[in-house]
Image (cartoon, rainbow, N blue to C red):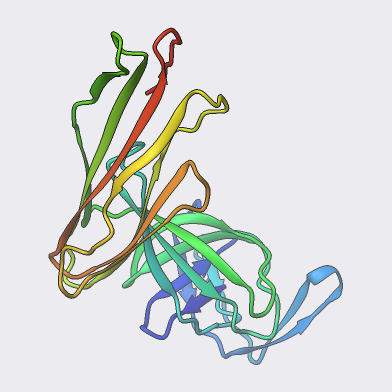
Length: 248
């Protein structure tokens, strides 16, 4: 099934991908829901399939969607931004599960699998790495200190993560940047968030910061065309001098 967006982009699911496929013109079809979430497609007119030894497709339905494009980046794990698209099934029938080919501006982008999507349900498709959104993790030194009046009773390490996100596209992008803060189950090992970026560097950009859990850090950015944003996350870990702490 091919799904056309309001912007003229298409997202297409197909049952055959191994060989070249020729799209065939067809009238719109009547779709009837069947048992066990199946669907019956009745095409309003017949379609001629050439006997040329190639696989052919017949369009049986088109669904107009309003896709939301968003990038996700985890700089500590990979220096890349991954483009995802979320859309809603605006049709009155289920979209059946199966292999799906994704096209952007008429060019094939990726292959994935479409799950069973109910009417009005959202579904997400990944387009893979977007090279036009550049992600860089900037190395910074760790700061160690001894604390206490007599020869240092505790140790403290301050860690700073610095990440740079640059949008080289000609349009603004939405991007979610994720990072991690270590957590300890021991009361005498104290982790404290010291500093984080809370303001967008571009006057026309937007930035928000949230912690869904104590160990997570997430920024959501609206990055204008050609703009870049540097994000900083600083935390400290303090523990007794006679205890060994690893993984920082």
